[in-house]
Image (cartoon, rainbow, N blue to C red; front, side):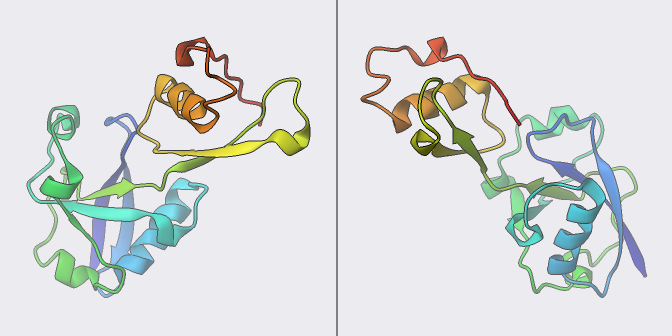
Length: 159
């Protein structure tokens, strides 16, 4: 038996979903790999946290996902679990079956005018916004940015 699972990556537009076809006899580990292959997401497959919603996430997805709290409204899937245990009943055709929670992004920061040795890293969840990133950077270097408002930091993506 093949499962056709509709998946959504947390922090993405709820209208952007994708389908993974996978055997019921495969494990959650295999599903993580299949999701990585399907999406070309640039993280190790084992770092993807997968959740099965506790209630149907039907269309329009935005209405359901807006109020969803994964720790309360989702079941964290364990790597060795066989998918036949997770999906004992055939999944509904149009609902979201798996929510993918990617790991926090690790961003390399460099202050203009500084040496390459002055680079530093910040981690920020993919669900956060640019103002959140500005605040995280300010908090990482409190002495450097002591008299600077976080929203005054100009950020540039260089690669």
